[in-house]
Length: 243
Image 1 (tube, rainbow, N blue to C red):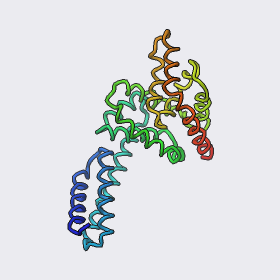
Image 2 (tube, one colour; image 1 turned 135 degrees about the vertical axis):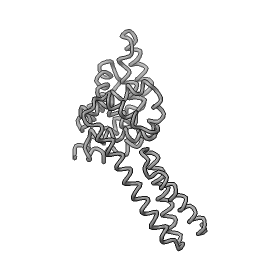
Image 3 (cartoon, rainbow, N blue to C red; image 1 turned 30 degrees about the vertical axis):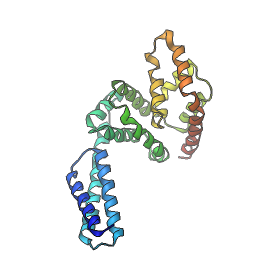
């Protein structure tokens, strides 16, 4: 790539960084941070004489990353003392976009768990974060989130908790199993099984006379996934037990 193109790209990234210096949209900050990193690396590998521009990119990147930390820490401080319903309301009020909401949802999970658990479950959180924007416009999804936050706040993430879910998914689900799973739906949710978790949480909305049909449909729709999920849960449980 010619030096002129590389330098122009770096200057464009620098201008973009300056334009979002005070932004509070985590997703936007992440996008610009990534573009600045790419521009910095291209400039570094190009061998072009642009020492001052390289320094400016490094400073801009540092400022953006610091801003991201500030936004995230401010959001986490706001979670303290809130009920699950208030957390979800705060989550929506604080979010600037659906992608931003997804990243803040991951922060909610982090708020209620420990660093070891984040390290182990982080890769699966990415899956959830990517799927959440599909649901954020639905009012019923806010109800699902409230249940998920309550579940996380009650400390249901543990090696034992994951094995409990694995045992329940080990066979064909009945009403009793689905009822217990509902208490642990946040485990499935944060592993990325958003639709499955949402379906289980909606159990209480089904009229008594259609409960059996509801559970039958649940088995038919998701039964083929259960074995895969059980394997993942057992592996994660084993890792968590070493925390």
